[in-house]
Each structure stands twice: as structure tokens, then as C-alpha cells.
Amino acid sequence: MPAAFAEGGTSKNGVEYTVLKAGSPGGGQPKLGDLVAIRFKGSVKATGSVFDDILGSTEPYYTRLGSFNVLPAVEEILPLMHTGDKWQLTIPGKLGFGEKGRSASPGKPRIPANAELDFIIELVAVPGRDEEILESGGGDDA
View (cartoon, helix red, strand yellow):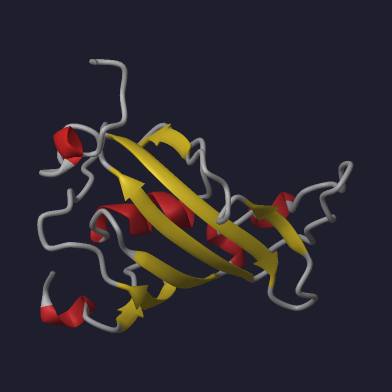
């Protein structure tokens, strides 16, 4: 990990990040098209209302980098991370839910247009790039 990322900084589009926990040096670093397993917790900065929280879940969320199934800020930050990293993000509205915001739904608060977000993200795994993936014991190749 470059020294510039040792404690935190700001991405090219304005996502502020702080490293809460550094992963292992042998951990994978995702690239466009890679499958990633992540855990996260997101809240609206102004109100503290949590809109998503799977940090404590045993099963991470899987997505392919570049598929835009996650917030634009997450797409931007993931390639900077290594497996095992856990980062605190401050996401500007344009890289969160943008101009449209998000309507309230059962168990989920309404997110106003251009709302700044607090986000904690953990990169659990980058299958195919992690050196230790074969030792994890997980998977169906028994």
C-alpha cells in the first residue's frame, strides 16, 4: 500500500477516507471486472439514519467491480483497497444517491437529494487475487 494511503486521504472525486484497519500485505487489490466480497454500513451524515448495515453479517455482499451495483463512491474506492482493509468514508452527495436521493422503504429511511453519507466498508475478499484464498476453507471444492 503506498504511503499516501497509510492513514487516509481524498479520492480524485472527493470521497474522504480513513483507514480503520489495514488488511494483510498479501491481500488482493481489485481491478475493473473483478468479483469482490464486501461488508458495509451506510448512514445519512446529517441525521445519522442508517440506510444499510451488513457489517456484522456472516455473509458478505458480492458484486463485480464496474457493474455499478453499488454507490459510485464505492466503485471509486474499492480499487484503492486490499483484502482485509476496513475504511471509513465520507461520501459527497453526487457519489452517493445523487440528485434523486432515495425514497423511504420498509426499514430504510428516505435519503434526501445530494445527501452526504457516512460509510464504513470492509473488503472481505477478492476471489482470484487473494494469496490466502485457498487456505480459507471456504468454497465448494472439497
